[in-house]
Image (cartoon, rainbow, N blue to C red):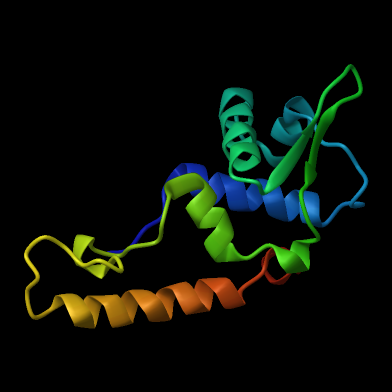
Length: 131
């Protein structure tokens, strides 16, 4: 079964919440935790990861917080997953280089992985945040 981690799932929830707000609004971890019902330490961790991955921008200072780095329509599901989890690969064989075994199924997994990545690239944060 293919699954993304709970941290990635929380990332999508946080980003969708932010996407549905005014794009100039600064969001802090405490307010996001309260609004969404995710524990504050987890929210802080996810915000840090998404900032390091270029999905969010951090604004320092007493009135600081986080904003999306781009418009929701310009951020893809693939980018979000890669920011949190690394490159999308449904099996070890499905990376562009294939696995060390170089067996006959590797090209098939690469095709499947390519289709998954294409679908994730076609899905934007704006799409996911629609009510």
